[in-house]
Length: 112
Length: 113
Image (cartoon, rainbow over all chains, first blue to last red; front, side, top):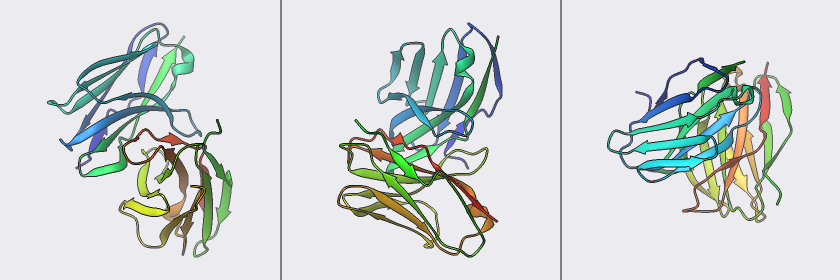
């Protein structure tokens, strides 16, 4: 059973629309949650971190965390073609502190 | 502030050979983690070094080994290369135990023929 699960996509989003990405995790003791963006052939780039239940906003990005449901999401508002990338959900903590567990990523394609 | 750097960028080896990959951590960071990312998959944790000691290991065989130096730079060594070792190898640095946000270097693309 995968420990961090994401929809693989691709998620096609019209330019200017909201992209909604979902992630579930199995380790109930997880404490830290991250979203990374990865362009093709490049390394992951940190977008957001979230530690507490609720929403956290940073520019056009909003991360949402619900520990009871073991669910974390990322919203991208006013999507731009430059947002076309794979988005990786990563989870840290529980019995694997220091070891980031990644989902397989969701590919987002923003269409003009 | 200097970010995480890795060398080399690309590497081609043949099965059975040995390889060493290098990583310099971001300024002020004392923890280095290594990940393997196969095509189309998320990164998989190999191991982490904190103040020159291994601080956790993922599900990788002993032919994957590492070092961290007093300046917090690190090496990943892989012996007896197999075709399945072909992947992007990522190094990430963070600010020590409790400062868990990890910042990735550009990666080393290893191809095993």
